[in-house]
Length: 376
Image 1 (cartoon, one colour):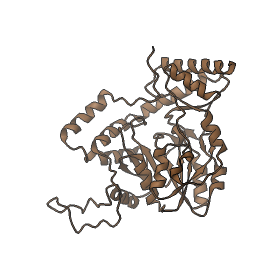
Image 2 (cartoon, rainbow, N blue to C red):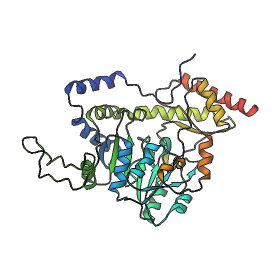
Image 3 (tube, rainbow, N blue to C red):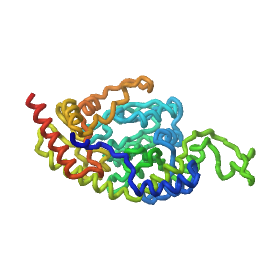
Image 4 (cartoon, helix red, strand yellow):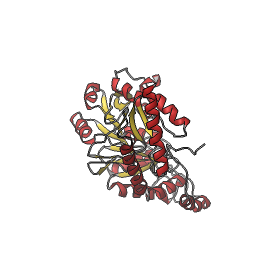
């Protein structure tokens, strides 16, 4: 049987292993200079913002909500079509998610439903850039400004995407990127929180490590300084030196990988343009997606998905809408477009690790399976 066409590729190359070897041998595993180095490099790559590295994206989003002033009982507008690792942060911050319907054509928040979902308790809006496709940031920024809401960009799989030429992550008041193994930058685990200013970033630095001010926490002998106060108790979610070293190394080559993603997505658009029953998500002219995966609306999606997997072509429904989970304690809202979207969306591989034969095999398989499902 032919090798699988991978939806994600988390393997580390020789250069990745080479940069990790001296760190692993040094004993500087928990803390080290590459943590701050990664923060500085990412801020430079984005061209703005103040970056704080954290242990994972859920903690990063939770901290963003806390720094934004979201408190117990507040409401946060968010897409149900997302991963638990994102929406869990709302509950961790003590708030309640309010599910907003999706615009199925753009895989972005419905601006009409954002208006309908507002209540006097709404404090913030988290916009998920679905699968690396930028949301309509100009409209969302204007909406949040009008209603005095904090805008948080959940850009966990959208590093390198742009909207109107500006990097995703700089339009919101806060933004979060993930360094999980299958993201654009593989740090095995980890995340970055983009803060609006230096004072907020300093607070984030303290809160990621229990609320400790590291500049005063140790006395001249290296012992805990009893006069160093912890006025606000934080969490334990610093990014360790090993993960930071790998993520920093991978960040240097991100544009090369994203160029492959974009070429592959464009190739697939052309290759399947004449296939009735397959309709790609169309990104507007303002958007330059990062293409974590390539998204298409697909008739008979479940049959096509099963057939592709049998042929060794990895694919996915991607997300289960989170409004089905009772643990969120959220009120029910009608989400007809989310149901429509999640019932027919198919995530296909388009990543930098693919070869021309992989793309051709994928397109041929989709074409054949869609045709056979329509004839059945």
